[in-house]
Amino acid sequence: MHPVAFDIGGVTVHWYGIMLAAGFMIGMWTAGRRGVKIGLNAEDISNLMLWMFIGGIAGAKLLFVINHWGEQQSIKELFLQRSGMVFHGAMIGTFIAVFLFTRKTKMPLWPTFDSLAPSFALGHVFGRIGCFMTGCCYGQKCDLPWAVQFPENHGTHPDQIHPTQIYESLLNLTLYGTLAWIFRNRKFNGQVIAYYLIGYAILRFGVEFLRADGRGHLWFGTLTSGQGISLILLISGIVLCRLLSSREKLEPVISKKADKLS
Image 1: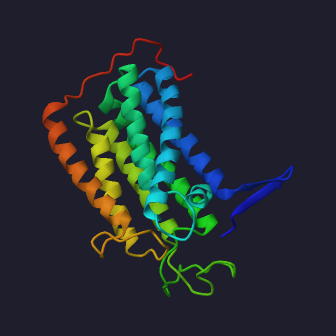
Image 2: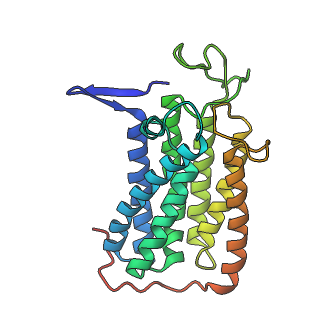
């Protein structure tokens, strides 16, 4: 745990922000390359990135506030927390942004989502490293050889705990590789995003069992909010896969503009 990367000109730069920025840029660069290869317009892809950034940040913050509604902190304090973000909220906000942008520009919805899906997982790899450096999203006590101990100023000190941030980072890296392979061998439009929903839901549901940080109110007195949303994502992915496999043929995307990413 080392939240601060460096200070420059009186400005403190945190690892959390650096990792979020790195994840977004690398993820979107890889998504852009995939999109151009299947015929999506490069200019539209570049413009979509801004929409996704705004939607993702807004969704992540909003769901964090909803999860912690009624706690002693004020709404303003919740919004201003540096690490006060929820990935499920970022996902929902990003999906809404993609849907609205494709409606506005007439980009094909499912091919666009398919080109983005592997990069969602790749960006999350960096995001969880940022969580580890900040000390949020931490795990329960354990005595395993790879257990970690955070500094004295962390609430878990001196306990040895699961490095759940690293678990999820590695699982997302595996998911990225799997989805990148599926993208190259997909059978229908929408297959990759459907598999992403299924894959991420499963890995997140499992990691939640090992986490010990506060994650808001329980669903039905048993499930964490992360597990509850993961179940919804899992069902959505399965339904989407069943519906699109019979309706969406894999056809080339015809771009009206240049096919090189600017």
